[in-house]
Image 1 (cartoon, one colour):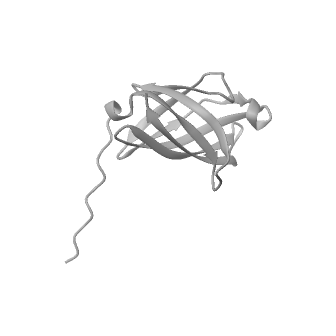
Image 2 (cartoon, rainbow, N blue to C red):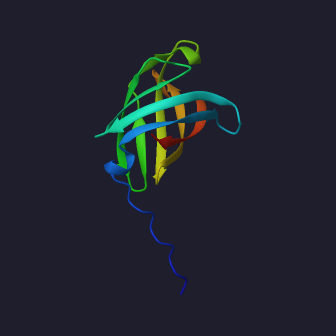
Length: 123
């Protein structure tokens, strides 16, 4: 019989808590769209970037080996002033975080405005 691959390690809030910095790229490109900082813990993150210095709060839940975050609707100047919701999935391995996300229009949750990938390190 074939051996089953080991299940991914379960992530805890302690794995995800802290201050993270990194870059985000438009999905499928090497084009950096943000140099970001996120301060996370206890189910919330406060995020900002060099390109959009306003702090945006998000909430996250730990789901097995990753965390799923979502912002409340906010006006994003980089998206032409559209009111958006940012969703992201992050995986932590040691002192690094990687993942992907997508922006949707706040009033049209099925509309994906942009997709991105990100990577960063714990400060």
